[in-house]
Length: 243
Image 1 (cartoon, rainbow, N blue to C red):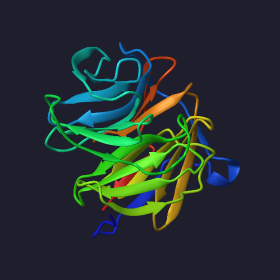
Image 2 (image 1 turned 30 degrees about the horizontal axis):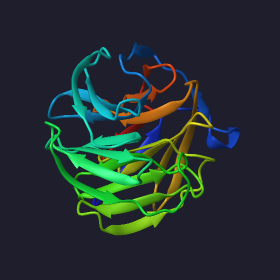
Image 3 (image 1 turned 60 degrees about the vertical axis):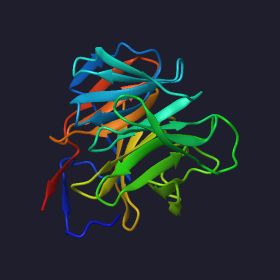
Image 4 (image 1 turned 180 degrees about the vertical axis):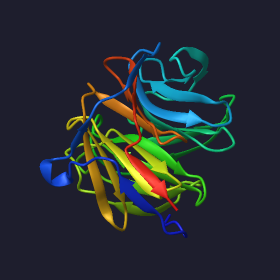
């Protein structure tokens, strides 16, 4: 969970958090051929983006132009978040049933486990990410309470955190090279870079309507998907990692 090597973050933005967070604008917008895309991941194995739609409980594979190149039906009801591991296995969050569902790259289910929070529907688990090195799953709950729950791959709860960053959370991404989490807020249209031990590092305001998923690429570009607009927004690197 805590990286063994010491990593330093050099922030590009000159506007500090005291001003309420730097406002950043995308340098590219890509139309996505999915109705109400919710959640975002990238599959290194298949070199494609992954998103889910709560309209039909399906995982969609997207190329870099936003075109659908594959589709997997999931036995769920209200899919909200998605992640992928190095083997191409896919992990999704079902908000209605408060479950994490795991399938392989072909869509064969091999695991599911409950997320016991006890809150009402539509304020439940919204995002998911994987720490591939430590073999941990992180699930972010939207609100009431807004928290991050940590599980191993067998569904055993290992920890939980109350980040206290925003009024709601819509997505979470773990950046293994820096050991930092990128957390997205829909209501506040913001990205937070956060660590469980050191807390908040930086906040960025974004002009994205209904942001529902976030991924940081190998080149440190940040990808954010909009549910209502059905678009993938691409931002230049927010941070530079120096080992």
